Length: 193
Image (cartoon, rainbow, N blue to C red; front, side):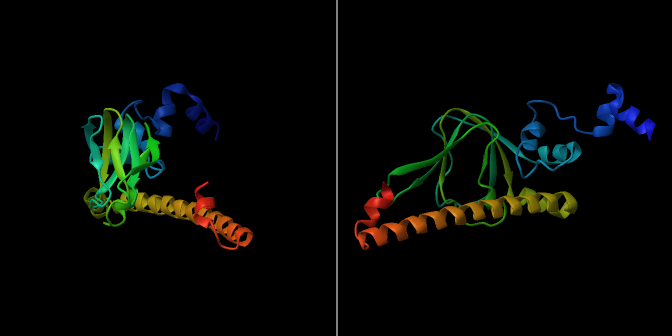
């Protein structure tokens, strides 16, 4: 047992035995910060990094539009991406600004539903794309790695669904209180405030 302790504390041998050596600024390092890939070993990260797609976008360039087919997820390596939705009057309402290390579009890895929002680059960006065919190919060729990613994606989706349920429940309670107070009138005006 003393030998094991000596080996893991020895700086010469530490990286060999811990296996967590990911080069800073590399695609692997960026992937390691994304929850869907955070559980992967450095070797698995390297395998995923070999199949992802790196793309440069200019300021104002769309990554995708609301209603486009969902093809996969994107990770912001550099830059800033605005996620927005169009309202019934055609106006864009920004939901969030995503920066380095943030990811979006992951639901498209699980189904091919149309995009529910717009993603447009606010500045010049470098994005990493991981697409549905890449995931399915990975599941076919390296099933344990592919399944690890799918299970983590399912966990992320479940967590977001729970958060959405909680927010909807709060909103419903607020609506109920407003209706009770106002007898059902002016509910829409109160909710917007």
